[in-house]
Image 1 (cartoon, one colour):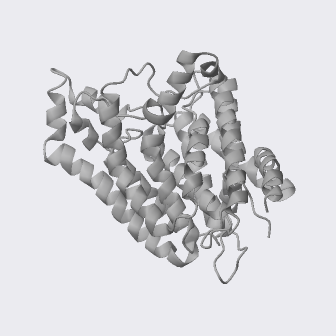
Image 2 (cartoon, helix red, strand yellow):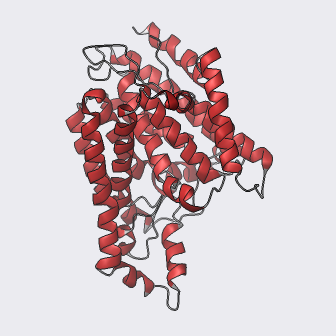
Image 3 (cartoon, rainbow, N blue to C red):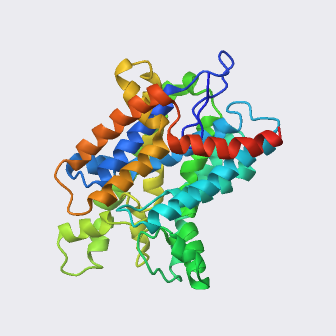
Length: 382
């Protein structure tokens, strides 16, 4: 059976079927794509609230799963040099695609350049086992946000929600901004997004079909710990009241906007901001909660992967990179203001096109490009 690459490497190596395709991962990735469409197209209401932050986190966790599967799944390749080359080539191409989309000023905080850096950071970690990867993810889920908060207190942040474009490569100041943004102050800073990738790599080192039920339970527990813990800290033990004092005279609605309008990092005026679990806040509570949701979604999708009704969604996930890029270009072409229910029409169109393309032509165009670009140098080392 053929394997897919780029963002949809979804085969593992369980003993009973070394090449069995994990359709459930495609379905989960399809959900992540639809969630990002809802956010980028301004769905509003519960669809946007449900997807905000969590769709991107699910995408990042699945990227970690893909990296683990590309390097051998439950049994890492003996020849990890070839796997590292494949991942490194993809990292560079994703980085360049992210720069291109940002340079086109698409209406979204483009994640792909950050993905490319995360892929490169993962290269030295490919030999690690699931337990070690999970432990690293747990340590960084807490330590990363605390370190980020401390470092950003002395840093000048020139742009909220920063995502790099080609213009940043043309000057020393731009390069400095790019490095700082990618690692610390941008929309998806590596310091606080690495736990998502590591958690996904830990999952990819497991026989996912064997643990899918436990994934749902563990994910639900982490989700409750993250989002429930934040609720206790903010609404029961006085965190919200403490922050209200920082904005004298502000209504609860204004404070809620302040707390929910994160662009990758928390404000540094007060450490209590770290108790929030707002989307894209990069706090320990958000990272733990969003990782738990991602794990539960992956487990549920693996449990339901045989449902025929989910096949179009699986096709969308198999063409995730193409679907992600395509919907941003469509939104750029439409411009603002966007028609009501555009997100629903766009989501339906993406699923339909992906299902037809997948059935007739197989890999998506961008997935095919990344596969061909990375497989040749990897074969030279095999």
